[in-house]
Image (cartoon, rainbow, N blue to C red; front, side):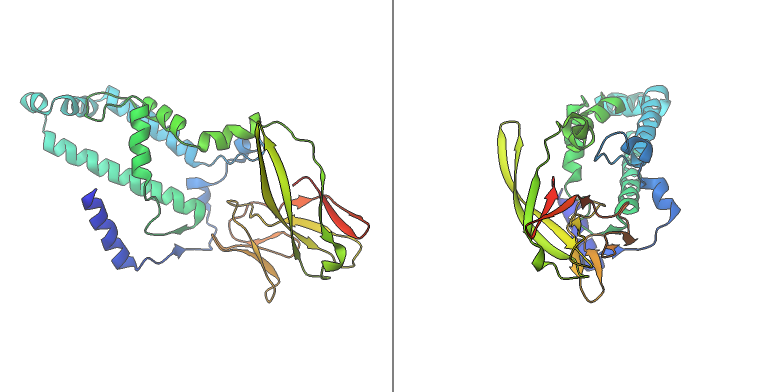
Length: 291
């Protein structure tokens, strides 16, 4: 860990901590980590990526390598008893170097997958993930001292230990709540032709937990009679967008998502327009359904 800190500090000095990003939307990005619409559309809110296929492919390949090849036998032998493996003719030092090279190459490939999805990267990207990886393999039955373990077990450990499971299957288990009309404010506050931000307090009940959260909604009207209500949450990764008046666009600062004033995507990684709410006007007050 000390060596890791030295290298990370050197990277900070060399890169000056700058954010590296691109606005290009290349096909290769979708191949590495694009959205899997076939699976994502099965459950509301799901976000399966092609990186899932890369993960499963790597698990199959390395499970075969570890259990069906001489190299794999040498890895288990050197991990269980290095002296005995050396006595049997296994070059333990060279084997360790090869393992570290493969591990580093896979870490680099993971960085490529992350960049393909977010199209931006910092020196600190991925910091702390090494501890999550160690926890995943331990939960999956891998002996940290060497000699035993499987790729399938590590995969199951990652599935049990990473909150992504709840992100994927949670929408399928979520109970539908009765939607209510939420008052945002007076329609007189809406400036014609310009999205106006409204905020409202919403109470949500999950099981026995009752929580209150703030709902932010942009309301647009061109004539004072017809209103369009849009969420201020970017459809890419859930960041908050803000209205840039001089450019007449919504902007997401995290990954440069740009939306027109009606919420449609102009540029960047967002896969769809800003979410909209059903609107009604009663007694000069703007209401939205749900939230």
